[in-house]
Image (tube, rainbow, N blue to C red; front, top):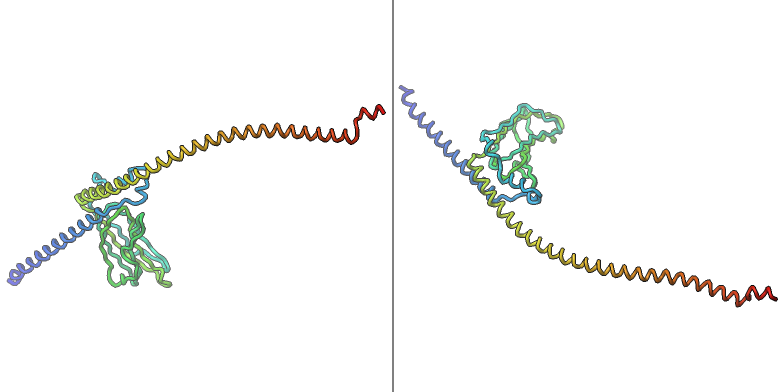
Length: 278
């Protein structure tokens, strides 16, 4: 009789808990969708993509993951009792290519605390997802959850024991990366495509203006070069004439110098044939 009396209450509690969990999941899904929408709507191609001589890299980032091979199942990275030497550090890098992926982690240590932090490394720089700080992961697991916005990025989970001079630490971790839903990927690539189109269209207009200015400047400089080349040719011709005249005059100058010397010698010393007659 007692079991029959409490079963409806327990069933009601289970139903309420299930409803609460479903409501929480829906709120979380909406928050993730909104965050993805904001990130994709604010998409800006990186400087290296805009500077690339090929169109492919930009399109690859806009397209995101290939839906024909896209899997929505989580990727799980885990290890147990990994030693981190005294004065040492241990990093777990995870490469994320799908924007909107949800990352969850749980870390723990045996007997002692450790310094733990998470960074996201992108071409634009490094972002601190979780500032590195000492955590009491030996008392209870440290957990966290966050959304990856712009990709590609490398998430680096760092276990830092550099402050410890005497103790090795042993860490265990479980990290799961859950890709976004397919419909979110589809919406995201369209938002990125619109934003990218807006940016590169504006960039193209600015380039057209710069190209026109450069073309005009090249025309002016080419005309100036032609004038200088013509002037140089005329100067070169005049130089040849002057050089020829200079060579002729130099030769005649030497002849005159010899003639002057010879005449002065005759006037001073007389003529050789006159002395023989005397």
